[in-house]
Length: 110
Length: 114
Image (tube, rainbow over all chains, first blue to last red; front, top):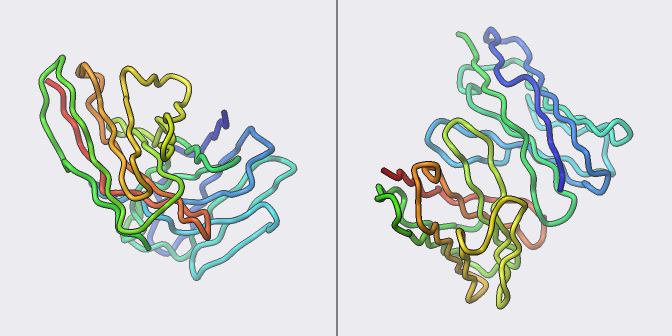
């Protein structure tokens, strides 16, 4: 099956700075790449996604980039706020099944 | 988005027993999945729950340990059989929206095995 790697595992940034999380995938059939945010004790929630026919997508302070040739995609959060503190998971979907990265624990320091 | 209800939300179980988790969706969906999230870990796909047929299991998961039912397009169950402390985890039901392909999760069932 698909193998998704995610880096870094932990990330601390000062409020207002940017945060970048990177993922790589192995299955060239993957064509959908969502990002999830999971707050402590809660379910993962979809925050943004990108499909293989697009190289970049932005939604307010969040953006994702995709490089299909290199099989990697990234999450960019600008102007970070304390409420951005959470665990973030990337995922890749070669079909109907979704395979998740190992997660990044983001801490935004006020 | 669809409403996904899971129960129980949490339970404490004895070693060697089995527990069935229920997942109810408020609308018909084609694709339903079961994930496991061990403490502080990522989300691992256990199986795809297929309506009217046997579930499709991922590598490392077997039907005898995690039997799954999917009697209709709004309901599924996952049983964790012959539990050991290593099965202590959050088990999440998820659905894929038919129109967009987005994956949504239930609240999860937190199992602790003593």
